[in-house]
Image (cartoon, rainbow, N blue to C red):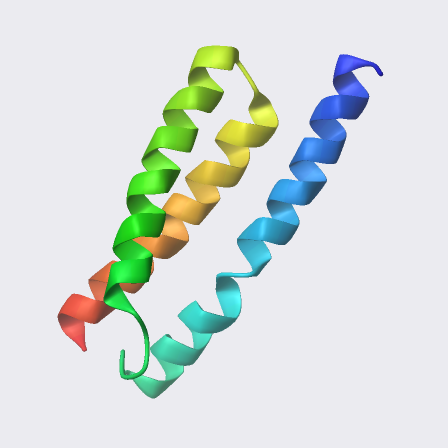
Length: 85
């Protein structure tokens, strides 16, 4: 399989993975409440994302870096909203 096709599949998978966080971010933002949301889950997700981002940079994988920058932004948004709400 070509590198381009491999990265394309990885990027598409990454986009879908990123989309899994969006409904929770939107719901929390609209409700202005973190009630019922696991803080520990988002802390673990944030730490995991940092490691995946480092890994993606080390192996020079656009799809891994791209996905984890977006997931990091979404998890950081949730953590900031946790502090504010």
